[in-house]
Amino acid sequence: MKKLMLITAFSLTVPFAYAEPPAAYGEQPARVPGAATSPAFSQIDTDQDGMISKQEASSFSAVEVIFDDADANKDGALDAGEFSKTQR
Image (cartoon, rainbow, N blue to C red; front, side, top):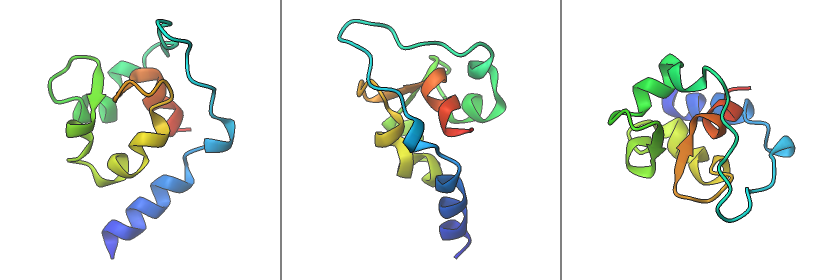
């Protein structure tokens, strides 16, 4: 029950209606200053490569649920910018 409440609360904070279109092929996603150093991002990014893989996200059910929608450029990983947009 707690897991369901956590997932529901987290998903309500994700502003999908304001999502940006995916970046053009070869274009780097916009970086959000300071987002990579957020405690949540650092905790999920266990290998500290600056990206959250689907495997890393699977350890956090709330992130796993929104992963595909949050991955704006569809590269199979969340960068700091994509992750920070889920926190607004």
